[in-house]
Amino acid sequence: MPRRTRPRRGSLQFYPRKRAKRVMPRFRTWPEVEAIGPIGFYGYKAGMTHALLVDARPKTPTSGQPVFTPITVIETPPLYVYGVRVYSHDPNFGLRTLTEVWAEKLPKHFSRRVAGAKNGHGTDFGKLEDMKDRIVDVRLLVATQPWLIKAIGKKTPDVGEIGIGGKSVDEKLDYAASVLGKEIRVKDIFQQGEQIDVKGVTKGHGFEGPVKRFGVFEFGHKKEKTKRGIGAMGPFFGGKVFWEVPRPGQMGFHTRTDYNKIVVIVGENGEPPITPKGGFLHYGEVKNDYIAVIGSIPGPARRVVGLRKAIRPNKHPFKFSQIRYVSLESKQGV
Image 1 (spheres, rainbow, N blue to C red):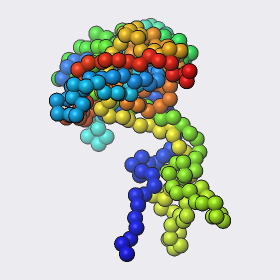
Image 2: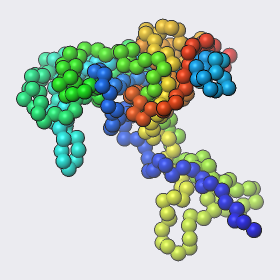
Image 3: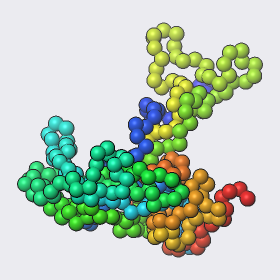
Image 4: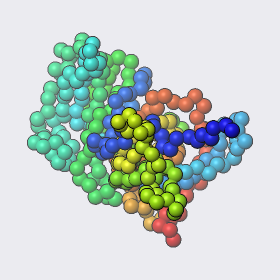
């Protein structure tokens, strides 16, 4: 008889399955974009609803018809550019931080995040002119403004780094100098129908067993010993348990990236209306700038997420020509 086989329980793609070091996501790589301007943003996940989008792909069975599509809403208040960071190239380690330049005026509540930070302690941007021959990349240091979102009830800003598009270092430096100490908005970065990457920390579930963590088979009621464990941890001889064996441990609160999410709506100050009746569950009402993307994204409501222009976009993405309907019905279960 042929040997009976089945797929293994649980993916080995993400190892080790341990807690994220920080809730604030960080992109280590940025795509090359010729247009001058920031190529990333940060926002807070509000929740999900659904919409009817008219399929604009010519060779699909649903071409020209409205398609039911789940969407996720991310509230994105303006980011404050409090600094500029430049990098040099090290032949052994790649990009290395060369120096930073901070603005004279820092964002509100910034001392809650960076101890001792005060206004008037900014550095001269002109010092970068002497280092121009060593600079290979320029990035913006930005801070979120969560106090603009009443639903979160948070004052401490989240700080992060976003890349700058441009053909040369001179273009990037000129743009960085023009926005230092100012705000940038999401509508100036992402457009409707564009592909973006979303990075965040998933919802945490704590310490879980192998049945929930990996989906292994649960034994029947006649089993004498454990019923929610694995049958064997490996061969009798060998003196160790292989890392591929499903074991109990941390589940959730992992850093994950969703690639090529399609932007459906880029709204300003809560318009067009996107908040369902009664507000998003565990969040509330969206009153600031926001974007809506197709599908789900990592993390629970109110968690900070990073947005980036797609680094490996699909060649044939989903395209839509019209938004027929966006559900604003209550999500409270009534």
